[in-house]
Structures are given as structure tokens and as C-alpha cells.
Length: 149
Image (cartoon, rainbow, N blue to C red; front, side, top):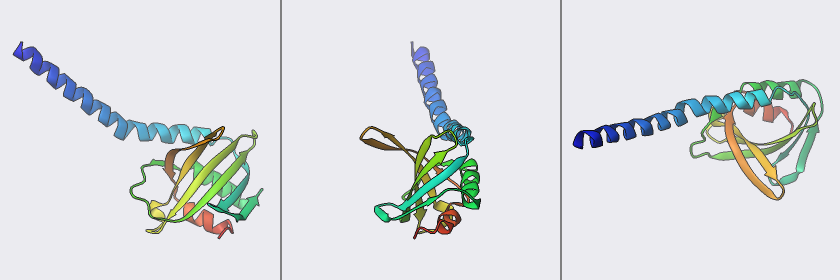
């Protein structure tokens, strides 16, 4: 009976360890892969505004900035923000070729571009929730070039 209990405890610990390993090592790769697949539909226009300041709204329809945005999304990696210090927050509404509209919150961190990230915004009726966060290498440069201050 003791031997059976010991084997049960060891199996339980191994199961817990494998669940944690899956969460920390497999889930980020899965989220990155699914996000990148969803970005295959190129953007045609983007509406940008500083969060909470609708007077700063700007719409970009074509050009190099839209192509840079598409490349930024294609290079994004899943990210777990750790105590963000938000310097600036931008709200983006991206219209794609298929007429799908995606929404994102871009957070520029006061510690520098290494910790800047964006979060996917999901809306259903009156409910808003924030999905996974992603880091992208050109995020700060892209927002500075947008012209929205």
C-alpha cells in the first residue's frame, strides 16, 4: 500500500511538472504561431490615436508605414509583460484586405524599446477584454513615425 501511495505521489508531481512545462515552454510558441498565421491578411489602413485622446486620431491608408506595420506583426513574439511602466499608450484599429478589423493597444515603456509591447483587444458587444501580449522589434520606431504624439 505504501509503495502504491509513493508511486501515486511521484506520478502526481510529474503530471504537475509537465503541465507547468507546457504552460511556460509550449504555450508561448503556440500563441506566437497562431498570431502570425492570423496576420497573413495584409493591412490596408490603420487608424491610430493616443489612448484617451481622440483629438490625436490619424488614419494611414497606404505606403511604407503600412508595410512596416505588417512586417512588425509578422515578427511579433508572445510576451508576458512584467510590471510595465507605460510611457505612452496607442490604440490601433487595423482594417485588412478581407475587411476584417483588428484592434490593438500599443504600450511604449519608459524603460526603453526592449520592453515595449502590444496587446490584442477583443470586443464582443459592450464587453472589452485584452488578449495575449506580443513584443515586436520595431514597435517604438513605428509609433514615432506614425506622427501621432
